[in-house]
Length: 322
Image (cartoon, rainbow, N blue to C red; front, side, top):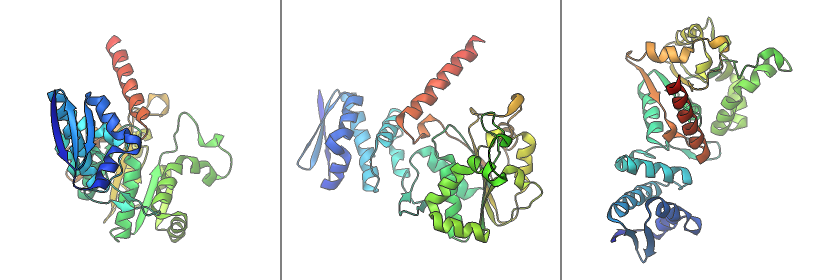
């Protein structure tokens, strides 16, 4: 058995690290089968040599987050544990390095995973970005945050959010109300993200001025979108023709972010997905970036990551038996 000490400069950092009823430290102890004790200004980690080494790396990574003002959660503790297992614990410092934007309630938004940080950097540097990956990775929410940031900085005059009105086999005609009532359920996730960033009052003001537009993809046909930040959400449900139509709407001074999950395609009659095709057609074009998220970038409940992994294993087994 070996022991290693970690010096803690500030007591409040230690309190945040340990968490309520020491739940954060208990999680690390279970993961690495070590004993962790806080005494004076030191944290003592005891156990087998390799386990102690990894536990110390994990604690140091979490302390980096705490020093950057991050509140620890089960999700980011598990994420740092995964980085340690891959030998990437030094990259924790790349997270939380800057604030994307501040929500209407004053909450600063930062990347929570390396995949999210790569996505944000790609949006900054490229005119078109495709963000592809499973649910819960923040693809849409971060894209809206970057759009709001660009709008507040007067880099664009408009934010345009759109998505195809295709969901799980339903059709618009089955929904009650006029056209706006029919399309609103499809666009609700986009509204919610904008409300978080701007607040309901500011959202309504910008909507009335035409600075914000939320509309089905069909409304984009025949338009040229200048000085705009355009987000196409749920793009796995576009046809190749719709995707080409959308991409060719891009005007001067505009950015476009296209998000989707190619494992959740709801197109009827096994039609080809425009997002799948675009990710192949556009991969070598300069000023277009394609970011692939994985289950490790999921920032929702722990079970979401487990569910995604379970489905991946199931489909892999199914494909091998064909």
